Amino acid sequence: MKAHHLLLQLNTWANRFHLPHFGVYSENRPLTFFINKKQFSTGPSTFNKDKPHCNVGTIGHIDHGKTTLSAALTTILARKATDKSNRTLAMSYEDIDRAPDERARGITINACHVNFETSKRTYAHTDCPGHIDYIKNMICGANQMDAAILVVAATDGQMPQTREHLMLAKQIGIEHIVVYINKVDLVDKETVELVELELRELLNSYGFDDESTPFVTGSAKCALEGEQPEIGEASILKLCDVLDSYVPDPVRDIDGTLLIPLEQAFSVPGRGTVAVGTIERGILHKGQHIELLGHGRSMRTIATDVQIFKKSVPKAVAGENVGVLLRGVKPEYIERGMVLAEKDTVTQGDTFEAQIYVLKSSEGGRHQAITNKYMHQTFCGFWSLNSCLLLDDSQKMIMPGDTSTVKLFLRKPMVAKQGQRFSMREQKRTTVTGVITGQLESVGEKFQGFNYTPVNRTSYLTEKQQKKERQ
Ligand code: GDP
Ligand code: MG
Image 1 (spheres, rainbow, N blue to C red):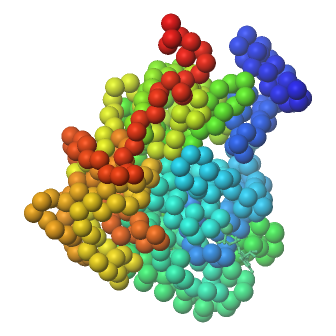
Image 2: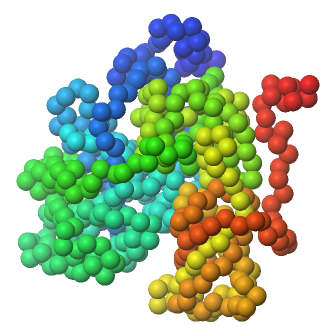
Image 3: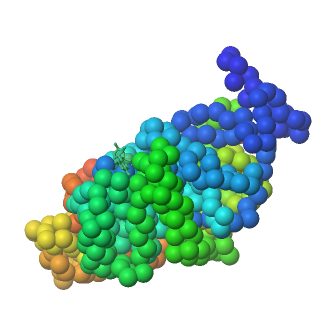
């Protein structure tokens, strides 16, 4: 048995009998272990929430300095922090770029979540390594961004991925963009002005408010390396001020019934299964009885521990990213796209009414019309799944550039709410975008190789539960 396993076991017992913890443990650095490259702390320290929370992330063309900026933000804020309670953890460029592979079940999204804190708010910030990771994270990431930091290198100006990310940001409902013009150490003033002018035009063409969008110019590299503070550090502090003032406090649905779309799950030896997700509505209390459902499966369980920023909390509210320790659930049971909800408050279904728009080839969509039983990967809020469009008998096809009402038939029953947006992708193109307008009775159509057969439920139960079920 390795030393840290022993410590973990000791601390588990300590937890049970309310004893002080063993080993290298302090209030600021609770004993943490890397499990599936994610941390889940075993420390009992609590985390008091006094500031509003906001989810942001970088977007922009490759090599424009998104990762450098993320590293600079955490490094400078951690250094500048005057009060001891500031929770910003400095992250190096390498730490952020080595984004954990969220291969979990389902699709792989490489994303790195870092946290920083200003005098006004706490932020969770997402950076992805590659272009396709950004696309996936925006279309089906469980982590909804409240605002995006668009990074544009002054040396290049806007580039294809700048435009694609902006278009997607608009589609998924991001309203606030803050622009950071990077690498100003390499160009003269006129170039920066030209880039800004061009970008305001671009923002306008995608339907963002180009006049009020704040622009910050600077050099993330200088900030990170501590050179030329007037374009380095000062620009980072200005960016934080702009985020604090321009992005309004996100309105969270705290009074609604609990709903947590899950991103992933992993097991912590000696403790159990931890599910990770951002609370969309309501409040989650430690010890609450909840229901886990999605992908045609459902199960009742208890949230035996709730953690935020890797620290135990008695409760967590909408908008916060939490790790929930679930009683008696195997990690294999949980898939991206499942939800945790209050008992009997949400239902899953496989047939929905939807209003769709078929993208024209000039918008990156299809040349041909789509016909009945158009079947492709569908990205909807927090899940992605193969699904099929069923057209009315009166409709033979839908031409690119047209809108229509159709039935969306999913391979498995899932949780989806009215007003939820989705898009369908064919190879590398987005061909259909739409919005769910209601849930319908299952059409129960069978297509070869499409439908899903429910898995035997007992195969997911722990040994103890199987024994109980057999009795
Ligand atoms: P990403 O692909 O958008 O994440 O870009 P990176 O953060 O990986 O940066 C790409 C390259 O640009 C790296 O070699 C950085 O060192 C460099 N870089 C980033 N910011 C600046 C800057 O402000 N000035 C200069 N000269 N180089 C920068
Ligand atoms: Mg990067």
